Image: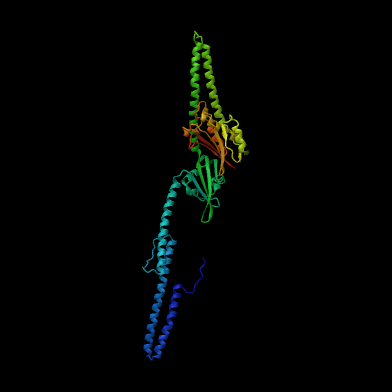
Length: 442
């Protein structure tokens, strides 16, 4: 802000105004003494006393007018310099000057408290930046590094002071800086190599645009998840293989003992045929298990196209015995989805519902509704409900005799492939459960 120069200061202007107000009175007093016929010496003494009194009064006015403004200026200067300890002495009078000085004191208290809070927050933020195992980089508008936390410095294999001010190209971070808003990249950096999740956003400092780059290492997490997945897979596969191979081995040993004996019993053929039948049955069950796993692992990406929902649901209902599926019709909607995969998911959900009601002959209700951006397809039954909902989507877990344990997992993969979800829960009120397949409308 440009300040226009003044000929007189504020206090000098007030003093000059006070002097101008007192000068006529002094002049009138001198004139009256002259008319009264006082001696010249007396006139000089009285005039000197009056003039001195006026000058003293003008000096007092000048000082009184300048004091609060100089006090305010000193306090504002201290605030500007970050010193909030300076306070003005305020008298009990509630005049405008006292009120202004009181407000300045309160402003200093508020700014001091705010600075203490800011210092505490900055100290906490600095501690968090030092402790988190995520690399943070802040670049200015010229892509020069302005801030890096210890994790980022370790990733660059250099101290923070050595990399600050250098460009993204020089540091090898340009590909990460130009990646998507939430990308996963394979990258080799001086401090390590692996798979990284990259996020970045923009912010402003002193009015200038900056960019914040956040890099987190996914290698360890992916390895732990992969290890847990392999452990679960080996545990389930071992369980299923033992369930099938144990009776096969037992029957094979019994048949081997039988055919090696010198004296065969009269019904040895029946025993052999029965044993071979059991072996064939268990082998078929094992083959079905492996086939189900292969189908789950080879699920392709959905081939989306415009699909009318009502005809699709009618076609699914027609695949089951007449009268077992109760279709609650509503206004037809159009989805952008893979009809074959949606059909497969619904077949699995309906078959689970039919197995739940058992031979009672109760119907399974199939309906749909639109909720905001979702289309919810519901499959309701009146069976016994869910006894162990925690393991519903665990691969190969099943409570049905002869079940493969991949139907619900396949449904969930199909739903997630379309950007949706599938949930199962007990009906409230009433017996049975309800399965809901949610698919985005668009």
